[in-house]
Length: 567
Image 1 (cartoon, one colour):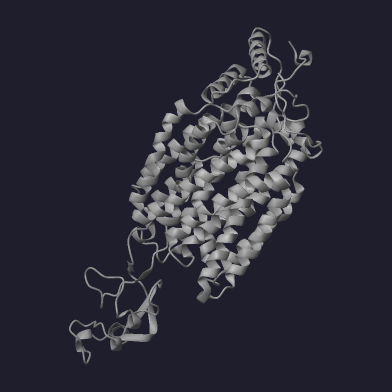
Image 2 (cartoon, helix red, strand yellow; image 1 turned 60 degrees about the vertical axis):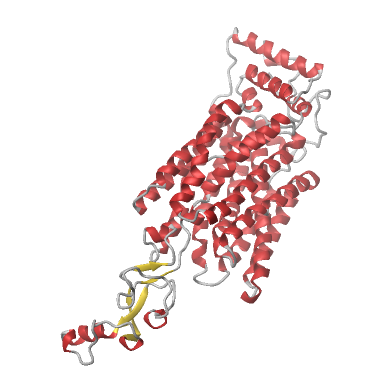
């Protein structure tokens, strides 16, 4: 039986509407994904605390005891600054000895021992480099590997982490589209958990850096969000994905509290990486995405999953839905006895021949560069914002909760383009304004920073949703991840944002504001996908910006022009 002979179509959106979006099956699915995604998010930003900047000073042999204390009264005359300096005042006796060549014992007014901890024995006009550093605490990688005077090594950890994500999104996208969403959902957390635990036993800085790269290169991906979008009907996909992200944000906010309670970096890694090993049981708890199964001609499995959802939610499907699933199963059995129909060859090459698809990939890629720089940069610099760094980090994730609810409402009410543009314009205003607030009103600066973070979170999530909506099912994860991979340039640069504060206070916030204007303008170049179902093939994806607005399909109304699965 060839496709032209089929008189009716398989209306997946209609069946998904009957199954509902928030039944017991979907709620269990959300809880399982939120556990996985929460701990992955913690691991993804582990370096914010494990490689956190620590106050330090030069070790002063003339003054320090065998077990030196960071805070001391003599630092005022022995150091040019009290903290975060890699220089010390030169001792006078050493200076005289170096100049004259005399033995220190022959110098008049000699002290016993020759170096005395008092102001008159230090040259206020000459400094020397530190031979050794003393840290305020030794909970961070910075202190344990003695990186105080090499700040580039500290920020390099975050840069290498995000560089690994470039490879991760390419690999996970290809695997997800070829072998299914479930492979990535189960496999990547296991990789992150195992490599992260090994990383916690690093004995050298370079060993840690290599493991940081391998963790992200083979352990992350966005398959869970793709599956969230694909498992519900067109009208509910943004709301469902928003709820999934709300639960993830709640879990991520606990990272700040965990880091507060478990400050030592090795113990902290054990606390956040070990729980990911539990995800191995998701093999039995998570089903493959129905849309992916249908597109890859595994119709029997897709129908089996749909029946499972109906049974779990105690829903009796309509006769039309049942007939459609019965027919598609029978056709699948018949097709197995016939010569296989020639499938679309060289799918990726056919995508590259589409100018619209290429332009969309380019637009979304540039937008992601801006989005990821601002989104990751605000989290990384949150520890330097005035106030408790742990509570600041948790607050930045908690503000995502009202943001997601706002996303669900505005995306349904106003479409895609205008909300994204408004969000990033406000983001620019808030960040730039926070940089010029006097330090005496630090709470105003913090509030403006949080408001900018809310807008950044709104925009990042919204742009990700749009990216997944404009590409066809067969290559949705691959193309989204191609754009996301290029966009990782922003996240690679983000860990260097704290270094900007050394040149001007608030400079990082000003840069965040300027960069936010990029996605605000680029959003208008993308089609509005608010009233159409997810495209199945290249033709449907190309015609997103020319399709007429249609109502939400149901089982009783064929999905002509919207989501239509033809077999």
